[in-house]
Each structure stands twice: as C-alpha cells, then as structure tokens.
Length: 143
Image 1 (cartoon, rainbow, N blue to C red):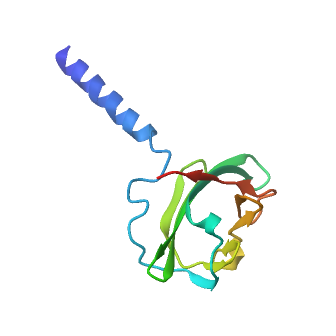
Image 2 (image 1 turned 45 degrees about the vertical axis):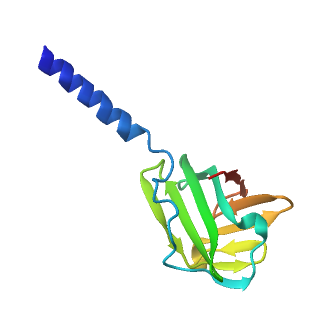
C-alpha cells in the first residue's frame, strides 16, 4: 500500500507539472544574439513585452488555439525581438530571437510569406499573421 501511495503522489506531481506550462519558460528574455533591421525607430508603445491569444482555422476544419508573446528591447543602439508562439493547440512551439524589420509603428516578420505583422493602431498593439481574419489585440505584460 505504501508503494502504491508513493507511486500515486509521483504520478500526480508529474501530471501537474506537464499541464501547467502555458507561457514561455524563464529564459524568455535574456540577451539577444540576433538584432532587428531598423528602418525607422520603433514607436515606444512597441517596446516591452506583449502577448495575445487567437484562433485560426486549420484548413476548412476546426479552429486552432494560438498564443503569441514577444519582447522588444533596446541594447546599446540595436533592438532585439524575442518571439514565442504556440499553435496546433500548443503542440507546436517556436521561441527565438528574430531579425525582423522595424519600421516606426510596425514590425514585419521575415520571410514575408508568413505574413507576421505587429503594429500600433491608436493606443493599442495588434498582432496578425497570414490567414488571420482580424488582427488580435495584444496585452502588455508587466515584468
């Protein structure tokens, strides 16, 4: 009975740890090893950490829950952009420093065929990606 109890506690702890990862791990941030191409200095609203959730259609079938979080920071005279995204209901993840283009009120992802765009409209920041019907409004994340 004691072995069974220990096994159940271990199993519950393992399952609990496996289901709690909703946001990027602590390495979100750090120092950039890749920098953006700055065409025009970024709108100050773009600087910092932002996140959003949105749904995309997978083919003609069902909606796919997506999560995006980015951090734009200035290091010396350059800008680093750390980008984190999950899709396929969290089964696929990408987290890395990007060398995207900053042009004032917008950040454009490369290669352009993916259609990633982060932009300022009024006093809000939005995210869009190819095939997304409506841009997703982002929320600032306080560090």
